[in-house]
Image (cartoon, rainbow, N blue to C red; front, side):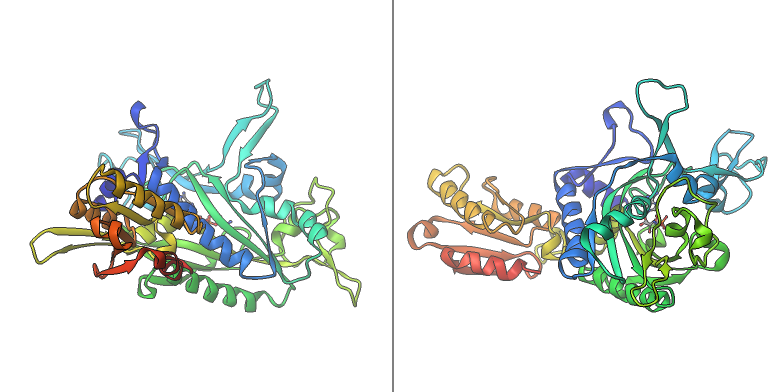
Length: 448
Ligand code: GAP
């Protein structure tokens, strides 16, 4: 983990947030390369969910959430972790994160009994902060998908089964944020709420598990480093009938990367008025303050049905860490030099190609490099840069370390015959190619 953290800072993937003021615990900022990798992960997910299918629509809802939503979703009552205090050094811990009854900080056994600590952040709304008008920062993106269920259904005429996805920030006041970006207080989720007929839920739960495993493998995660954890009844969230967690072998241990829950009709039922008139099977929250009927009418029987929900919910930041860890390797070359490589799948690489003029600041070479950059950039397959450092060896090392799959060198021969050298990051093989063939080669290399 230390090597990844150091690489992230050195090369501009991730910085500690608010660093110049001493930082703020559990928050990180994504730098120039980090934001590219993160966007590529999100795009790949969105493409697989929305563009490659015909049964899923997207949404981008507000982060600030009416407290009634989170009252009726059950989060006000139950979204908490057990917290203990050390009476000796006053440190606070999540009870299930400490191994013995001793304080990990000072070793004292004088600890309080665990008590629930609600993880939701509150903020005041409007100009008067008298505590009466407040909103929550959403703890999951899911709830605003449920509150928009009717809007999406009415505006798109979808039929069951269908899904709504959202990618966005979620906030949790974690008692002990830790392990770099694994457990933080502000993070991003990629969530699908897939609405199905009751009775078809178990089939779809299995189907989505397979789909999600397949997607992670396509992002470069070795299947051997993934495990399925069938969450036992006593650990299930209040809305879940069954949850299958996809666990990844993170550098600090095997932990949850994505949860796939069968939320039944709990959420749509909880946000619906006149619950007794609907055939709801789960133990929903008390009758809602909303005026909505979050149900669909069966065309044949005319009965109202509250759909069941299968929810694959993945953390962008945890995905980032897993993909980074999987791509990272360090090797010693024949000449004794060390090579650090991030072997990202090309569609995820922050920079797709670096165009390197052999001689720094040589006008003709730099101009040719810029022209090649512009022609490849115009294909809109991701970021292409001109690397004008003048040292080919250093440029290759830098681009290996940030995961650029192709380095294209222009030299004096290029000025004469229009050929360039293309170097592959993984094999380190170099081939001479006509620059007029580059666009086709680049497209074939990158199209996913
Ligand atoms: N809507 C369901 C839900 O939020 P969850 O298991 O609490 O379920 C889903 O969260 C995913 O969000 C997790 O699998 C994880 O990837 C990510 N996640 C949750 N808490 C996080 C935190 N404090 N820091 C980073 N990622 C987190």
